[in-house]
Image (cartoon, rainbow, N blue to C red; front, side, top):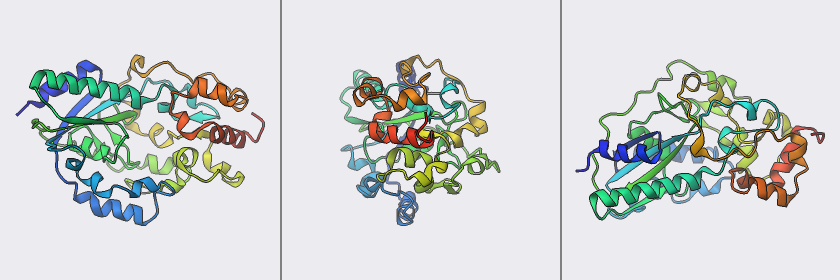
Length: 307
């Protein structure tokens, strides 16, 4: 059996900020919870979340002979709040080059190093790219707990973190124990959400969530919904900004996160960008997921057409 400390050392040397390992098993305990969440319609128009139900529960369906799930964290908490001071505001994670590509490269490098050390290793890298319960696997790997805002919270890094996985067919010593939930009686995230999207601790009604409204929802945002956006044009960080664990979290230098592409741009500049200009400036960032038309309309709505 491969030692988890060896795997963690490889991950940290590559540039990840935390790493943990758990055994592959079917996540039967989540079956009813996830079914109820879908049944209540809390996923809104994200129909893709209804598909591949069994794949989500059992990673052995994703990688033949899978034995271990390696979970990694990459923090994007640089301590810089300037992009969220005034509308149009965007979530911190979207201010730089798309994290999917960066983390995928790092995970493939990690897999190659595992092969160099341990011979033939079959595995796949995942970063929001397949039906994987990423937060649950991170919890099982001892990397944190699920907060009342449903985010993974790491004791040192807080919740401004990206999660990735390598699912491999070699047996790796799992982390000794999971982190206990340290939210206690705190309800700051629930109290701060302007749309009360956190129904009960750990359960989000996406239909009320600003991130969903500005990114994922298929239907255009109506003029009457502008107040629900609270000045955000892409994503939302409110439930994370008020979390005490983020105030004490370790800051990173941000060098691995790429050059900022959003900081300093005004609402007027953003609203007046042509589609080509938008693509040139934001095409390699998460903003491209919402697309030019949706971003432009959202900015116009939250500024009353007068950016």
